[in-house]
Length: 261
Image (cartoon, rainbow, N blue to C red; front, side):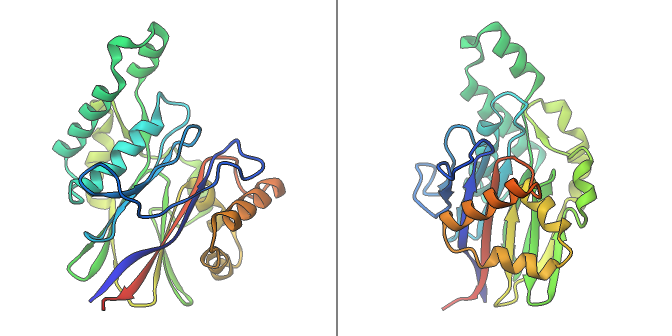
């Protein structure tokens, strides 16, 4: 049987012009049930979490214009992994309670309380291995790509133009999740666990860049050749300067499908 392994990952904040905020994603230990995770610091609302042991991975992009969306994206990622990759109405409502508790609303100023009440929003990609295949759950405009040689599939978008649409994000306001919950059956896809293939998980700035490239395979292989956080920073900053990549928090995680020993 094959398994998924994080072979590369990095993130950089939207306001970075020099590479000083770039962070390498790695399966470091966390205090949440032994889950491995890497979470960016202040100024970056993207989050990533994983458990290679349990074959669970999550990527989320907090909407910067909403209240403390970085916290919401972290909670979504950590609890996908800690909760065994369960996606359900009760599990989402439990995450909203976690967020509300962490925000300590009673201690906020009136202006922050008003922002809190408008809600926080985040995209979400949840990856899990099930029955010898890869299952992908997607809400919003973070992109997953299955790549094997000249074959590739993307989800949930397949064209750059789709990034102009309003994404279907997860919200901390319970009633505003009804459209996402109603669409949950079409928010899944399944890909083969072919040894030698790769999964690329990325937030929207990088996803739009990738789907805008004329030579799709060349672009995918360019991402797969990245081997360090410094290389990732150089790539993102050069594309930003060229005007070909939106200035936004940008994260890439590459999962390799490898034969189990």
